Image (cartoon, rainbow, N blue to C red; front, side, top):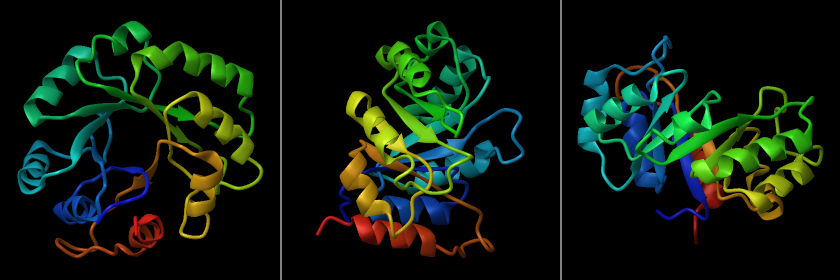
Length: 207
C-alpha cells in the first residue's frame, strides 16, 4: 500500500501495531525510550518488534536523555532517527549522530513570530518538526493559516487534530511534509483495534 504523504506513527509498543503500520506503507515508526516514562518500551519487546519488521524507518523518542546515551541506544537498537519531545540546546542536538525530529508544541497562547524565530534557529540542526498541541482538538479554520505558514517555511509533520473527515482538507490547504499519528495498547496480546488508524490510511491511500 502506498500513501500520499509521509507518516510517522508514535509510541509503537507491540508487534501488532508495528506490522500493521509497516504493511500500510508508514514511513517511520517511533518507540518511547524516555527514561522516566511509565510507557517506555523495554529492550526485549523492542528487539522482538525490530526483528519482525522491514521496509520502515525506526525512531526513538527521548526527552532529557543526554546525547551520549541517545547515541548509545540508537546504535544498540539500530535506530534511523531520533525524536526529541522536549527542547534541547542546539549544541546537544548536534552531538546526536542520527537525524533529529523535534517536537514543537503550539497552543492558543502561542505567539507566531516567537515560534517562527525559534524554528528558524533550530532548522539547520534538525531534519523536521513534529507539530503537536494539547489545546487544539482539531485542525480547522482557526489554525490552518498558521500551520500553512509553518509548512511553507519548514519541514513539518502535523501531529494533532487529524481524523478521517479533515485529513484531506488539511493536506491540501497546509501542505505539510507529512503527518504524525499515535499507536496504542493492544486489547490483549495479538489483538488490536485499528479502526481509527485504518480510517485515516484509507483516506490518504494513493490510488
